[in-house]
Amino acid sequence: MYTLKHGLIREGRKHPEWGKFISPDKELENYSDPNEKLNVYIPSGNKADFTPFLKINPVFDSVVAKILEQRKIMTYEEQCSGKYYFNCFEILQSLRGKINRVAEVGTYLGGASCIFAGCSTHFEFELDLIEAKKEFLLFTYERIRRAFPEATAMIRLFLGDLPTYVKNVVMKETQSNILFHHDAGHNFNQVVNDLASLYFIKDKTHGLIIQDTHLRSAKIQNYIFVDAAVFAVFGFDLAFIEIGAKFANSTEPAYAGKSYFINNQAEGFYIPFEHNTFKYPHHSMTLNEIDTVV
Image 1 (cartoon, rainbow, N blue to C red):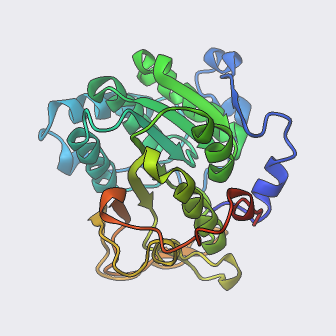
Image 2 (image 1 turned 180 degrees about the vertical axis):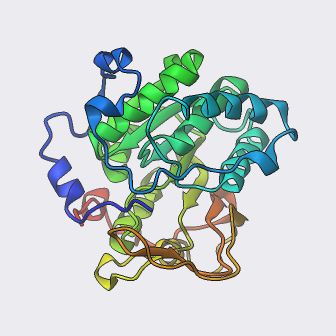
Image 3 (image 1 turned 90 degrees about the horizontal axis):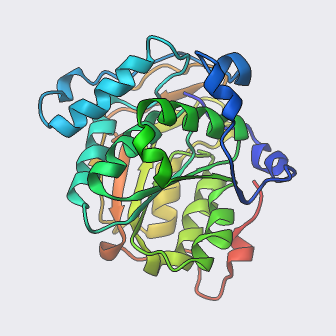
């Protein structure tokens, strides 16, 4: 499991394009594998198992077929389960006509991004990709361009974090009915910052899908508690739907972050805002107070 290093956002904010929409890297089209140029760190090379979820919906099958073709050529990994991706698809299908934008926060190498892009033309929504590391954003776009070229006209690439996107984009646009997907920094403080920023655009937001609610780290200083951050912001009366995989037993710590999955905890939550209220931040607080660097 890839987890962001402390200080990544602090370093990212020094980039001259931070807080702006950026253009794709056209040179990547000349590489059979974009990672030959970008040299992105790939901890495991894990790929999702879609097999149990095929031959249920032809649209999902068509999206997966294009993703599977990339595995023969491109070097990347998918960090969510096949069930998680299928559940995201089911949510998007159920929301057809009710949302007009998906904003994905934290693309890494485009595992969920490709699902969203493949669905965007079928279910008629635009897609904003939000990422603090430029290389991840460029890699993700190139994956999408090759698999779903018809979707690229509906995609924007934003270099930044969620509070910056809220401030620089959503609060300045008239767009509404946005569904956010969060799989960005997993540090408790960072997740609280991110989710609390949505308070200021709650009237423009349909809801939130958040991943890695079952993730922990054997390095205490990483403070990986995504689920705790969710309850800190929305309270213990949270109305949500569990999505993704559950493990009967906790997994063993792995990779540099010593990350692992706890048992009997859902991989992700789907949180419709119409059934929930923000317990944090306090109404007297401003977005500038929320937008702090962890």
